Amino acid sequence: MLTTDTEFLYAELMDVVRLFGADAPDLSHAHADDGTVFRDEVRAGGRVFSFCETQPCADALERKRYAKRFAKIAVYEALKELMGRSMPWGALTGIRPTKLAYAELAAGRDFAPLFEKCGVCKENIALVRDVLAAQKGIYGREEGAADLYAGIPFCPSKCNYCSFITADISRTGKYVGDYLTALEGEIAACGGLFSRLRSAYVGGGTPLVLEEAELARVLKALAPLVPAGTEYTVEAGRPDVFTSEKLDLLRAYGVTRVCVNPQSFCDATLARIGRRHTAADIYRAYELARGYGFDINLDLIAGLTGESTAEFCASVDSAVALAPENITVHTLCLKKGARLKEEESFLAAAGVEEMLAYARKKLYAAGYVPYYLYRQKYMAGNFENTGWCLPGKACVYNIDVMEETCDNLACGANAVTKKLFAQGARIERLGAPKDIPTYIAKAEEIAAKKRELFSAGE
Image (cartoon, rainbow, N blue to C red; front, side, top):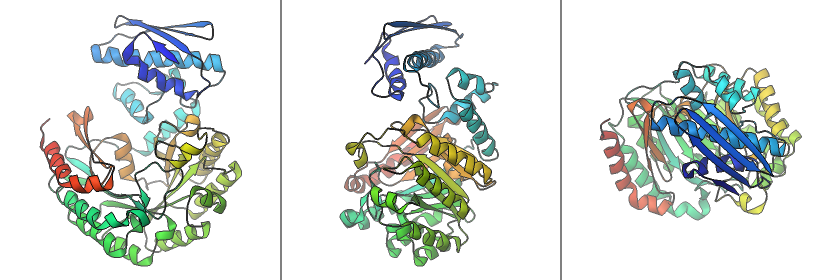
């Protein structure tokens, strides 16, 4: 249990407490500041921890930001001392560590001293530095530019770790026709809302679970908005839905990149998580896609049910041996709606640290560089997800979305459109309903709200 005498700090401090798990001791926190000197006191386990920081603030907003930062560091340092363990990202609980790094650089400061004060380990500070280096030439704000997203919330089956709205298409297939009609209308309404398209992305779900004629409807709807030569990604997804006919369609409509998402190359793991394919299918899908000249993204997950460190490392070896342009290494993260969260203690981090360390070493040695990363709540071991690419093969869409440097026109159920104002100082979001029938019923209303949002002045 946590108590604090400053109400607006409670949620931030609870995020820090959760890092240490259910065995974290009860804490009492007190805060005081005059806008220059910030004092925090933490009482726990019969001990008192006192912290003091000096930081002049220009206004009330900055004062509040520093109050949160110093209070979180205080609680983290107290828990680290009491529990005898540290976290890989220290007191940082935000999902985008790179945004904090960029903010420090924009203020004329190296980000490393702040990260060190927050308790971030040196390996992760180096990781962030490499990510920022890989983003050079791509990272940046451009007035009127946008990324375009279309979501396909259908899958062949639902994996046990999945918390997305997707469901087995055998149960939701009755909605496909009406869903595509709604999606076509929403996509059409995006015309004229941007001056330049930086990238397009069809995600899921598993877009290639659609029949050829259904997939063609999505691609045809997007075609007027996606100029030739634009980075154009389709999260083709599960290897068991790949066909040459569907890949013919992707190439015909100018798709440049596809995602093959094995998650693991271990057949036993694939069966446990609810996949209906084998490692052999992964190789078949990969070779099929490679024959079309697409750039390829592969995804792996560290911490899947019952998977040993050796099995995960073997999957990393298999992915690297294929030499795709991108390999994303996720850490298992579960939210409400994932079956696995209801079945077991999913945040146990046994072996995950070793898995991620092996992946980093292997990928660096193979010539890959980290180019984007993000974190989530309820993530095993409080680690991170990292996208790796061969030099010059970074996915623009992934960078733009993670760094929030560009407007994002997102279409489909559960899609979240983002509009940047004042060069990114303010972001307004417009979320679509998660439920497929509700989305279908409200698609025209969503499209109208989107046009209203993008016609608003600064």
